[in-house]
Every structure is written in structure tokens, then in C-alpha cells.
Length: 440
Ligand code: PLP
Image 1 (cartoon, rainbow, N blue to C red):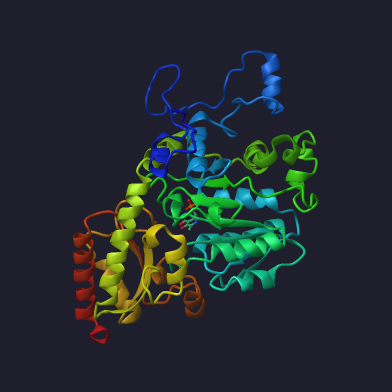
Image 2 (cartoon, rainbow, N blue to C red):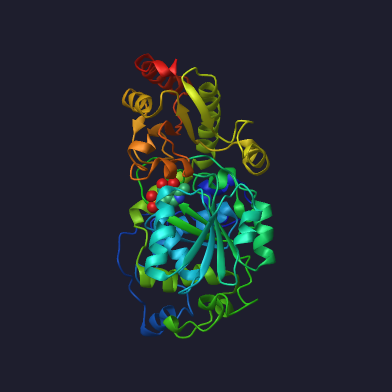
């Protein structure tokens, strides 16, 4: 069996894709190639590798065999032609926009995004690069259409969103992108390819914080972009000059001519990682490869636990509202049933506790099993009160727009026994209720 045989099924690819036995030692799990550089056999090979005429390793800022194994596995799982790994999810987004946009270009992004992404796209991209964003409510695909200008180079969404679990209509947005010949990119951090493969629904690029479910154990930072290989960069060559026109930063190479459907993936390595330097560390790639081996199993258990927790919360006297796409009352219920595997909507959700800010603080202070921290996608159940932490610098109005009101608590449901997860939430909610009459 070949480690890159794409006819294999998802759970088999999770284990085998990109990861055969080491050819020199026979080691069955991939080695951690902790090296900065690679010896060239001779000067001719060195020149060929440098000029991308021949595949080979030069320097770990560009490529590294352990990171390559992860890239191959991610591409196989998402159905892409290649992948580029980075140091974090935020840097994957930086690399993606850097490759697609030039000074003064425009993008349309969902208004519902992870808070750190919003800060990056709204403030830093504009200040440092003059990339102008329009942010639209992603629950209506036509909002994206209305915001497109002749300078728009990418439509960017996160689905399901952090923290409200909003799931977009991928096919409708892909159609709009197609009509305008614009790249459609999806942050699939919370969905993961185990539950949803955006490329199957017409997206062109998929980005990840591998820090979350893909590594899965809260122990490795990383990011990735999977290249669908399904965008015709040459259709309007001036639109994406880095890929379809001579690249002055690399011998005037025209990446779309040299590498065809792998142009984006090659450019992000040869130019993007070379010039921005946000390469992933081999130890983190190794840990993520190990985590990916159980992705299918974990996502099923995460989602089933989350569904039960959401139903429990809906029926709890101390809870005002629950935002989880597995509930028929959620704005994305239909999209969840259509696009997510067996309607499983991953395991990030929010809920509002009766009694507002103070009750939320009491509840969070009294959980025993849950970890109170700023992360999602761990085997462990996690929670945070955004209004006192991640979103504390916003006004009440801004908190509401971001889906994080004073009473909001974000949960990332782990894969412990769901009875223990629910028991912990129950006792913490009951404690908060006993302290705040308004909850009762
Ligand atoms: N995308 C989503 C959906 C996230 O939740 C996060 C982080 O929480 C990021 C991107 C950024 O990833 P990282 O923290 O790995 O930079």
C-alpha cells in the first residue's frame, strides 16, 4: 500500500497518509527531523533544488521532512493537492492573505470569526498592508455578493464559528466566488476534515489552527493551509500576480506555469515561508501527526458529547439560551444537517446563564472537571467567560455583536464520559443559581 493512496477511506488515511516506515531505519512512526539544514550531494543538485527544478530539502524555514509528512496527511484528509504548515493558525491566515493580496486589495470576510482573527483582519491587515476588509453577516450568503468590489481577492469565512457554532452555506458562497472569479477560503478549525471537507463544496483553500482538534491534546501550536488545486490562477493573470505573473521575488518564475494546480502550495513554501518565516517546528508537526491518527474517533465523541451537553443546558432552569448548531432552534441547524457528517457539529458552543455577568463568574469559578482557559479543541472539557477575559476590552455593544454578552460562557466539550461533564456543569450552575436569585 502506498502512503499517498487517496482511494483509502478517511480513518485509514488519518493513520497512513504521509507516514510510511522510515526508509533508512525502519522506524514505524515518523522521526522528528530536528535539523536546520540538509547536505547537498553535489553542486548540480544544490542548484537544481534551489531553483525548484528538483524536489529536495534546503533549509527548515522552507521545508522539513517531519512537517512535510503532516502536510501530506492534511492534504489527503481534506482532498487537496498539497498543504503548507505554519507556526500557528494566525500565521496560516497571514500567509494565505499575503500570497493572494497586494497593497490596496480588498477582501470580504464573515463578521463572525474568532476574536484574534477579527483583530488581525480588521486592524493589522489595514494598518500594515492596506488590505481593506468588509465584514458581513455570514448567515446570508448574499451579503458576500453585495460586498464584492473589483479589488476583492478573497472571500473568507470560519465555519463552524468560534464561539457561536454558526455554519455557512458553503455551496451558495462558492457559487458567488465562482461567478466573480474570486478565491473562497474557509477556516475549518472547528469542523475538521473528519466532519466537513469545504473543498468538496467548492471552496479553494482551507485554513486551520492545528493547535485545536487536529493536534487534539492541547500540546502543540500550529497552523496549515490546504490547497484545493481547483482555482484557475491564469483566468485573469493580473488578479493574482504572485501566482500567474512573473514573480520577481523568485527568478521571475510564473508559479502557475511551473507548478500548475500546485502553484499556491509551492509559492507559500518557496516565497511565503522563506520571506515571512512562520514555519512550523518539527516537534509540533510530530505531535499533530500523532493526534491526527485518532481524529475521526475523537470528533465523533466530541460531537456526541456536545450534543448531549447542549440538550442538557437547554433544559436547565439556570440557562437562558444555548447556541449550538445541533439544536433545531439554532440559525445553522439546516446547514449543520446538510454539510456536517451525520449532522455532527463539533464541540464548541456558547450559552447564557440567568443572572448575567456575576452568575457567569460564580459558575466558572466553581467548575471542578472543566479547565478554565483560553483554548478549544482539547481532549479535556474547557470553558471561559469571554466578557471577563478574551472580550473584556470591548463595550457591551461590541460584546453582543461578537456573540459574547456579559452572561455568555463558551464551552469546548472534551471526550471524557459525558455523564461526568454534565454533572460538573450541573453542580456549578446550581451553585451559581443559589447565589443569584435572578437565576431561579
Ligand atoms: N481560527 C480559529 C477558529 C481559532 O479558534 C483560532 C484560535 O483560537 C485561530 C484560528 C488562531 O489559531 P492559533 O491560536 O493557532 O494561532
